Length: 425
Image (cartoon, rainbow, N blue to C red; front, top):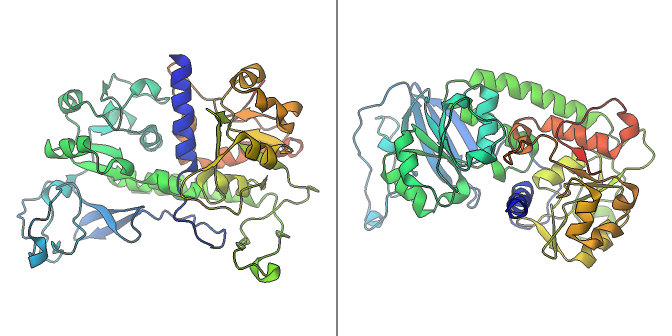
């Protein structure tokens, strides 16, 4: 059972780490540090919180109006011939232009109007717990998916609502949350529909789709708006950004690789000035990621969350110029060709070298294994399976970045005590 749960965590971890790269296209390797999938706007004495659909560029997934008291409103949606037979999901903003929200007359969708500050919340993801913990509102959680897999636990017992794709309705309803925070990939789930129909507003978070670590952290501000704590979020994020950029700038010089105009190959991707190599070190340390899982090795592309961290840490990474829709699956042979001489291995799914070899004998063929420079992300875990990497790590990517630089260039950081990364012994 323990091995099975560990495998589930490894796969979930790969998906969350690798998520965030859109449709494949030839573009500069330059990822915005600003969150792309939410907007907060002060309007008519309220806060309008928009969540954009990561799967449909420029389209709204949901809109929420955050107010001090529940408004008495009526439904005055404009109709057109195209609206006949249209399905209205009360927890989603209808983006088909057949129904319009009239801001001037303050006509809102009833279930999208949410009184704040929230006092009782349910959540389906450990990453949400990281936001709530950072804001000091962790004890507002009354229900969550698999609470035993959470690292930062509320001070009281919470209801277990099961898997996020198979929500247990009875404990959720008994917990009486003001809202359910849900990941945006579950937007079409029948279970989510049932939650909304039961009168519990569903608030979607798409932080896992953000490519840059600072953009993902910025969702702290979105969550903070529901608790009236945007000033606190701005303070935290200001410090996170300052620290991240200090670490990022610590070892950078101009990248010497040719750009597309020099190579004559129109398919070559241009490296932006932000993706820099190191100075004064004589050579960038090369990095490899992940591990073999049932014969397949999944690695992040250059513009995913981990790809950005590798770049900003100053690592040489074999797939820095690749952008795929999700992860890059490799055979063991392909992994060996890409990583056989990599200096550092991060994200291994084991705590000991013997365990790593037992998972797959091929792991011993890599240089990083032979030299003992293999690291995992299990340093801050608890006995029930919670891992703070998925919670605090989302809000504080500067801590992950510093750990990566320490693993890549230990001589430059002899006194650094790692926070999330542990050495596979």
